[in-house]
Length: 281
Image (cartoon, rainbow, N blue to C red; front, side, top):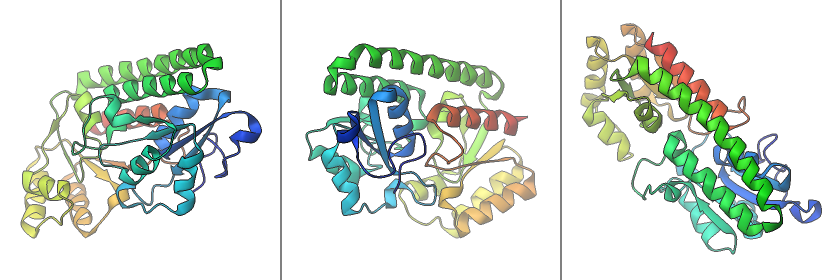
């Protein structure tokens, strides 16, 4: 797939011609961070940049794998989210940044780690370190770009802290645990019915009983908002979102891959925080 606009090449790795550091990211949200931290010194190519497929299900082409082979720095998500990319990157000599591992998140944990403040910061610092190792001549400039990125992350953290003051302890439910880290940073309470949540976590179909329990929870009025991953819509989520609408429960609609209207991960996260705040009113 082509890289997102402003975050790399058109799919062709041309860093050898431009003199830039060649970087490959498995998913566009980490690719956007890699671009900001590298500025004019890097050429970032994203393997996945569309919201109609998630990394769990993605089947890389031979051309995708070849991009990792020629990269000087590879950025993957880890935590079993993009195993195909981790495997491809590990087989090369590229400096590898595993976002989940950078923050101590192990395989088997919730893999949607870009929603976590802790992981974003750790991954950004790991990317900068990888750039400085691969391209020491521009080490000071990478340090300055890292400082600028942290300033933006600090602004996002301030927003999260502010909104947390109004949503702390509020109960939410989710069709998938995609935004769990963000909701946790906002100090909200995950009240997704256990049977449904367990089924989704195991990548199995929720039973009719699981769906009914979810619908009943929404009708009872204790759930403040429903978080819906529209990238994984199904007959089951249709029933749940319909129940939320009937019960007047606000729905926060989001995707796993960063939507095209956002040029970077932090702007996307800021918009989602605003969405959570609006739903809580």
